[in-house]
Length: 240
Image 1 (cartoon, rainbow, N blue to C red):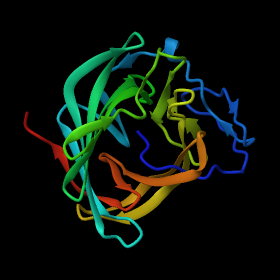
Image 2 (cartoon, rainbow, N blue to C red):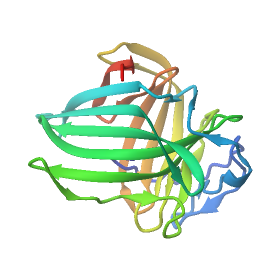
Image 3 (cartoon, rainbow, N blue to C red):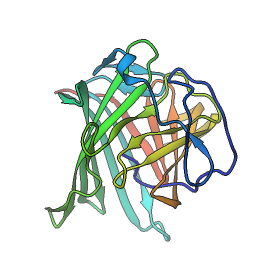
C-alpha cells in the first residue's frame, strides 16, 4: 500500500520490461503501464527478486520522526506471514503491515502478493485495511481486491527494474490507483541498520490525487529501507 503520494512526471517515458510493452494513457498525458499479461504467467505465493522478499518470516522494521517539526514518532513493521489467500483465482502471500504513531496503533493492513517464478515480477492483488483510534477500528478506507468492482492486480516490484519505468501498483478505479516511477538505481543511503549503496529509488503517487507524492528506497537483498522520513532499523527472518 502506498502511504504517501507523488506529483506525476510530465516527461514522456517509453520502455520495454519483462512485464509487457503495453502502455496506458492517463489524464495528465504520461504513459503508465497498466496491463501485465497475468493470465500467461506462473504466479506463486513464495519467492524473491533483488528488491522484494516474499518468503514467510521475513520482517522489516522502519522508524522515524514525521511531521513539519519532526515531533511525531512513527514505526512501521512489515512481516511476510505463513498465511496465503486466494484472490482473483491466484494464491497470494499475505504480508502484514503494522503502523504506530507516537506509540498508538494507527493502521493494520493485510496485503496480498504473488511473484512470477520466471521473471520475478511481484504483483499486488489488494489489501484489507483497518485504521485505529484509541485502540478501536474507525474505518477500512483503501480496501480493494483484484477481481472485485473492476479492480485488477498491479505491479509492486519489477524483477529487473530499469531507470524510467512507470507502472501502476494498484488498479482499483475510484479507490486505489497507486503508481511508481523508477528514478534511480544507484542511490546510497545511511540508515540505523546499515549504509546501503546501489539502491533502487522510486517516486510513487496516485492518479486519484496528482499533488501527493512519496519517495521510497530499496536495498538489494533486503527490500524497503526508506519510506519518506522512516528509515530501516532492523531486518531479517523472525521465529514463528
